Length: 265
Image (cartoon, rainbow, N blue to C red; front, side, top):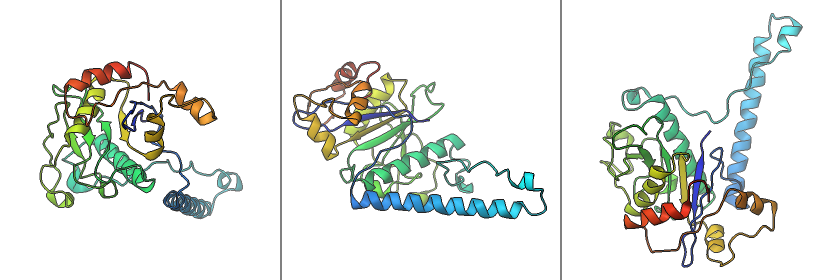
């Protein structure tokens, strides 16, 4: 399961909020795009169920009624394409899985309008890199690529110091932004600060979606007026004053101090 850290809506009086999720689920929104996405997911689930039923019927030929009545286990959720052969020597199987998960998260964020064109970031700490001398490494979107263009192959692997780790991915798989890639400094400064200090957090989402930005600019913040609000408050909310675009490394220590060791928003 992925542990999510959500850093929401920096506005004029914005607060820093961190939210941890047990899975890469973004919730729902009553927009036409959201309904379209939900319908597409439902259609895929129905198709998978129908295929599974056909497989069960076919495999039951020649079996006893007792054997035929025992269905095979359901297919696992959140499955991703097998790693292409030309990438086998470029990354581990776990990195490929994390790249697919993160790319899917960017696409979902785009469908729900949780993005600012090429700005904002969702990052994931790569498994097994915490002991690297410049680790942990994390995956970051290549600056200049829209959320709707993110793929598993055009994500950048970067160090806590903001340097791109050597990319061995074939150039033909990086067609949107060819070359080494560009790291957007505000994204690196904010995400590296948290990845380097909060070892319990694997994934961070920094967004300026309208709902979060509006709430973060009020003096009273989130009020316990609904079930969803109380769930959010129980995660632990931290506040960080707006200091402008996060370009200075000096802000990292203040950000980490305000976030604290356990708060998730």
